[in-house]
Amino acid sequence: MLLKAVDTVDLIAPEGFKKNYYEAGKPLIIKNLAKEWPAYHKWNWDYFKAIVGDKKVGIYNNTKSDAYTPINRADDYTTFGEYVDMISKGPAGWRIFLFNIFDHAPQLTHDFEWPDELMKGFVKRFPMLFVGGASSITHMHFDIDMSHILHTQFVGKKRVLLFPYEEQHKLYRKPYEVLSLADFSHYYQQNGTPDYSKFPALKLARGYEVILEHGDTLFMPAGYWHHMEYLDSGFAMSLRALQSSITGKLKGAWNLIGMRNIDTLMKKTAPKWWYDYKKEKLITAAKKELEEAGV
Image 1 (cartoon, rainbow, N blue to C red):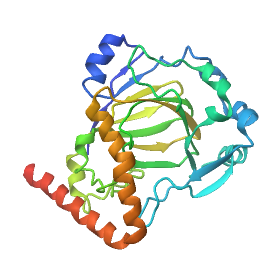
Image 2 (cartoon, one colour; image 1 turned 180 degrees about the vertical axis):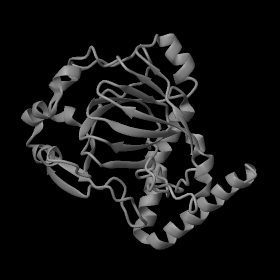
Image 3 (cartoon, rainbow, N blue to C red; image 1 turned 180 degrees about the horizontal axis):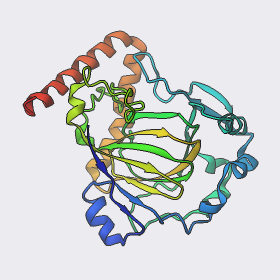
Image 4 (tube, one colour; image 1 turned 120 degrees about the vertical axis):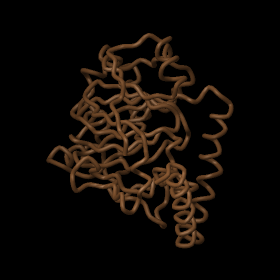
């Protein structure tokens, strides 16, 4: 993989953001966007436990999906308070995915501001909390609705790997899914993945790498691939904004309504055949990338 650092600024003027990052489809770290929000100082484990500790949440382990894995089905369930107690005891490879804490505690929406000056189209009904224990992993994927994301880290650190959507075949994207067949777990360690002998096109993939810390806001353009590993137990909030173009909106709608339903149906009716079919297609696409690069 060919990785470089993400551009980082303390703050940025709306004009510069729109020209150099939003319209250019380039990620950015904004260090101080969230530091004036009450949430920056107020949000912590104890506070969240006090207001939503009794709420039931789905939790997800580090196992990558296979031919039989339904999309977004939780691996287990617990209360938010019990989950926080578990991950506070040490490394725990469990995370909470798309928890709309604001449905249960709408007063939290007063603790941050929507940065409408940076971009339009925020889906203000759906700010989302992402929570993980140290060592938990969000495997390589892109967001199915193709929204732009502002992802702010509040507690803990996590390592993030990013690739433009156009790198999908080098990343071995599974057809009709938003996931990569390759495993990027602990990719930065000597004995980590990915396995270049099994996935040689990964060597050509051009992307970015960053470690998010408390208060950092990551702008991820629509369709960006991302892989996240929690270095500490922590949580972050994502604010989503629909693409301004009709084409972008239609692509997200197709992914949600058409692509996902087709994949779910085939996983139920012919999972092994469907998995093998998709694997053959993605290997062919990756080989084409290698041939075009003269490798």
